[in-house]
Length: 437
Image 1 (cartoon, one colour):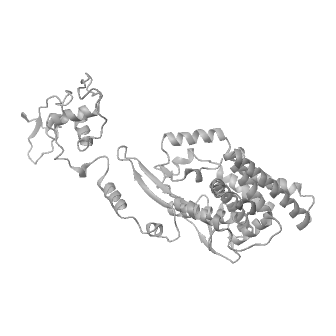
Image 2: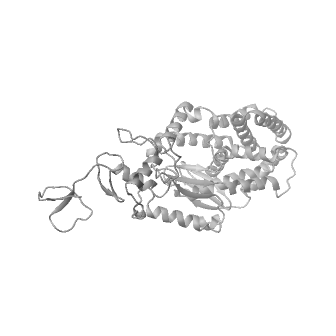
Image 3: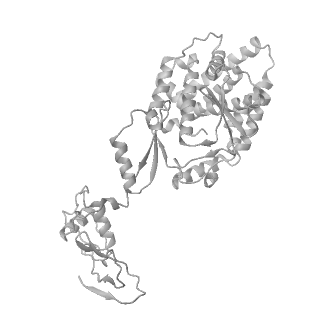
């Protein structure tokens, strides 16, 4: 190898062995000993180009390529490309390249901190999900995953424990026997039981991040599972069908329930305009829709402002319209239970079709008869068509195309989000977290 002194002060040649001396050294490179293209320097014991050095850096410690189809006698192409990786690696070894001097801490594909975190994660499994998150009641498992080749971060959420817990609730049935003449009235009493009868502490949510989101998901799914145990006809279905219906309806159910709770809270002066409420265990939670700090760094590399293109910009206004409609209607628990069933069963039947659609229609017919008996026999309201129309107007507003403005445009945006990896979140059970249409 020849060296030539460079006396020009304007030279920009860099060297890994630079010192305080004003004189710099540059290397007179030959062609790459592997591919024959212009060389870059000596890498791992041979003169190579950057591409061959990077290839050997990635593959020099393993040889898991498919065997050469030409019996290790591949011809080298003129443009500098090998037909197979196995022959290229063999050529690297033939010219004397070795992996003894690999500096693993300089791996550009997996940073040292990331690799250390992954090793610690795999070698030390937390005792429980509560230990992992610092809260004893959270059973959703959430961990980052990394693609070593593309360096793309993924947030993997394992909801197996949550699904199992919800399924066990469905198996056990309701803890408190409730006597009611119809299934619909039993569901209404179950709804009251889930909300509780005692005044609850009010808590203001100022930040909505990963832990808060996972906790709300967990609470909503388990709450719906508990509520379904008061549904006699539902409990007669095979267990797997029950689980499938729960996966399909819990998000829709929670949406209507939170609207109803917010409407009640505003009538009682517990929250103001642009504030929404929910009930989680022993607490009433409220937050301002435009002032709450939303942290989505755990599931997207984009900011909330940047994601407005993919979201519904008029959602806040339509939510306010729905809350006002609920305040004007003031549905009883029986009416609200019917609205929940109608909305959820309509969505489940539309989503699964086939036998599930037949089950959903059968349940809706039975519950409609229950509602008729409630109006005629309980509240002495034989002319209830207008009130029923107002109830269905709210449900239709939630599930209609108008509520989502332009469903085609929404689907296009969803596809764009997938193409550009807007959200790097994956679920162990994606069918339970699909967004309702």
